[in-house]
Image (tube, rainbow, N blue to C red; front, side, top):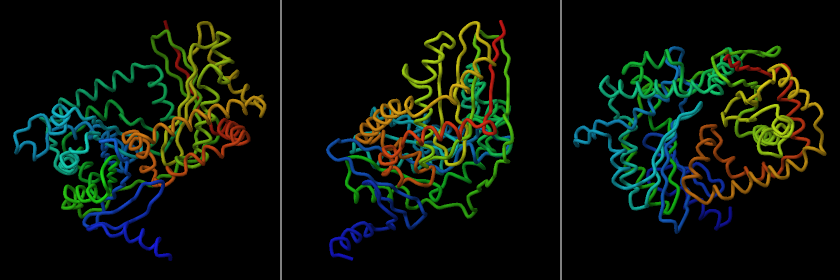
Length: 440
């Protein structure tokens, strides 16, 4: 090992209270020796802004039957008062008070594999923001007084989403596509389960998963490494992990044999054909290929299906989406039918059109798609909050270092990759077809 390399390694490992894990793309990973909390540090100098983001490695996939949506419900509860807030007479919760007083940006969201909370603020507020996050890690009050009003809010949120034909259809398609795997239910959960939440159910989930050894803290922005890591250690270093292990489900989805179908009928003027397909997990190259493939098929006026369906008056909209989940999940390609069109005809037209696609058609669309995604990546990597939001998905997959290689992965995607992806993903035994039938 050269003297220069040795000096760099020593510099990375000589942070008091931490073990250095690895570096990639300007991001350094450390782990607190006292409790296993992992910390990702990335310097964005001369901005005056810091984003701190804590990702808990728990989401909808960790929920048992009968308590679907509890990860999302708990996310709401972390904006309620903590035990420390009550002692200090802060009735609304310190995080919300912090937002009102400083004008910082804060929010949270829950997904299949993770729940994440972030603050973005002037760098002078680092210690205060970290202390709020530390107090929420194990000190939130979960009782009927705090739960019931928020439970009502989540039920209203469910009803709002479920009133959307596209959402309602996607819920039923996920349940149809997955017979065993917990990706088969939406993150918000089922209404019946939301109605049955109790403080005890939330408390059990909270104690099982909200703990230092199940969390990754990011500190990204205009702050030097020593100051950042010492601040994290000061706020989080004394938090203890429970004596119990972190519950994990290891579930293999049974092999699909043949097309699966689901239909919803409601009073509505909307009619939808949605083609679901199971795709590889994130952040494999296959996932990125599938994401670009879906954009080529459905995004923008030059896309394959826009020209086939919207330009010809057969559809009013075409949308496609896949999620960055760590395991095989369901992607959706949805078509909102124009008046007079039938579900069967549109389904056949779409699937048959894929068989005729060739390199001559795909190549110019791929070139444009790659340029757009790479440009967006370039801009996203200039801002601490955007970096944290993107890096969160890599963290939840267990492969955050792939973030550094994503531009190269995107550049390597070929026309053949796209054509192979279309053939693989839309193979009959991989499909779940959903119809939303509007009845006047």
